[in-house]
Length: 307
Image 1 (cartoon, rainbow, N blue to C red):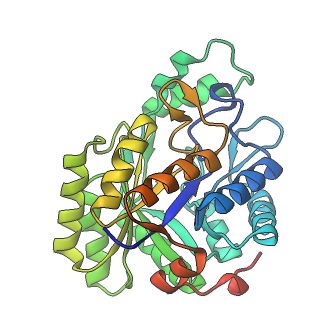
Image 2 (spheres, one colour):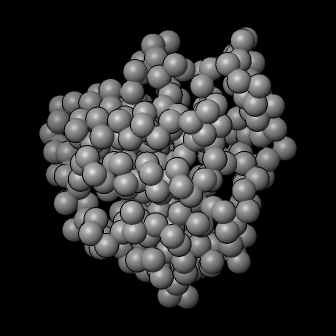
C-alpha cells in the first residue's frame, strides 16, 4: 500500500433522490456544508454536482455550480472535482460547461458509453417528496450514458485547455482501452488518473477480483498511473480497504452510498470519510492532504481556477 491515501468525497451525485435519505444535500448551502465537513474529516478532494434548491432535482445550472464551488473554496482548501456527468440526457456542451467556464483543478470524464440503470430504487420509495423522483428513476431503464470517441476527444481537449486534470471514470474494463487510445495519440497526458467505479447496473460488478483485474489491465496499458476506487452501496466499505491495500486511493460519499453501515443511513459524506480515514490509519496508512494531491497530480492550484 502507498503511505499516503487520497480520500475523495462524492457529495450528492445525480442518482439518489431526496426521498431516499433526509441527509442527502440538495441546496448549495447544504452541499457546501457537507463538502467542507468532509474535507475537515480527511477528504483531500470533493466531487460535486448541482441540484435545484427548490426540489433537489439534479441540474446543470452553471450559476449553481459556481456558487457551490466558490462557497467551498472560500471556506476550505479542498480540491474540487467537477462533474461532467451532470444528469440524464444532458447535451455534451451542458456537461462540459462547468469545465470550460469555471476551470476546476480536476474534472470527471466518463471513459465510454454504457447503460446506466438505477430504476430499481424507485420500488423503495413509497411516498415521494417530489413528483419528479419516481419518473426520473424509472427513466434510467432506457438511459444510455453516451460518451463516443468524438465526445471523449472534445472532453479531453477542453480539460487540457482549462488545465483541469481529467479523472477518468472507469465503469468497465473496455474503458481502460478507450483512454489508452487517446494516450497513444498524445491527447491524454500524464499523470493518468483513473477512478474505478464498480457496482453500477450496466457496469462491472463490485468484487475484489474485478478490481484486481481493472488494476492489472490498466498497469499493462499505462505502466505507472494513479488510481482510486469507488463502489456502490454497501460495497463501498468492502472494496475501499482492498483498494488501499493494493496501493490505490478511495472514494466515499452520499453520491455512491447512503449508508454508514447496513440499514443505518449516513448523516453526511463527512461521516463516511471519517470511517474510511480510521480504516486507513488502522491499516498503517496516512491520509493525503490537498497539497499532497496537488503535487501528486501536478494540479495548477486553487488560485488558477475561475470561481
